[in-house]
Length: 111
Length: 119
Image (cartoon, rainbow over all chains, first blue to last red; front, side, top):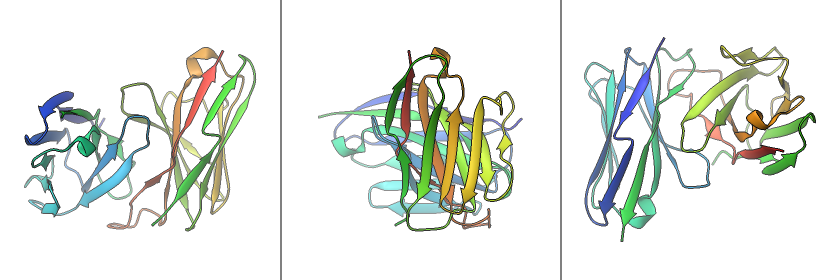
């Protein structure tokens, strides 16, 4: 079945450093979504990417969807302590399939 | 923005009892709701998908007689954990989708979750 993988599992960075998490799917995706879950909280939708090669930015966050629509990345520039949390990617083969979540990347930011 | 609530946020129960968790979409109608389970430091595992007015679709390995789902209205879905046991202790999260999986409009909005502890 469809699998969604993420690396790294954990990342500890000094405040101000950049951070990137990578998401890879075993199958081509129709779209990919990114969520952030703060410690003790629930997942919050960040963005959805649909087009091959798409790049979207939200302030210090840059999201990219691969040309083959099988991988994606989230890059945070100059991390802040408010960026702490677990970032999940979630994808589906078609818009009518269920969403499969990746295992998440847990980000810690050292002040 | 779209808000989804869950009740209760936390529940502790004795082994063998049943627990009902409610998921409500507060400012939109949700034709589709999803129930997930999340163990500590792990990802979200989809348990079932419910569509208003029809039976829920359960994922492989999820016992439908143990996890009863009712999506009685466009704003309310309930998950009942029947005869709960300690291994059912987990974080249960619902999400709601405002549209029936229409391409480009399939954003899910998550509830705050319910932490279930079975003694």
